[in-house]
Image (tube, rainbow, N blue to C red; front, top):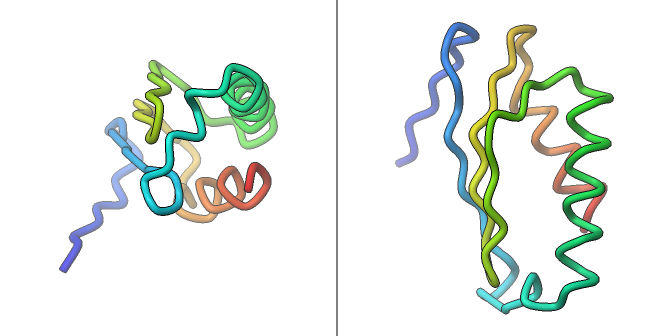
Length: 82
């Protein structure tokens, strides 16, 4: 069972992968498109993106959301990009 903590005073470290662990981000165009979408998401949702790494089949994010409702904001990023 996954434990989730909703504490606005701390940053969130997130990792999520591609469907069936496919190496989709190994394609330069797809990785660049994701980074553009990540920047748009950061601006629109008012999330502070402290660091990110795009690997061939997954992504690492270090984000801080001082305003709360982070789960819904993250879902919006994934839904928009997919």
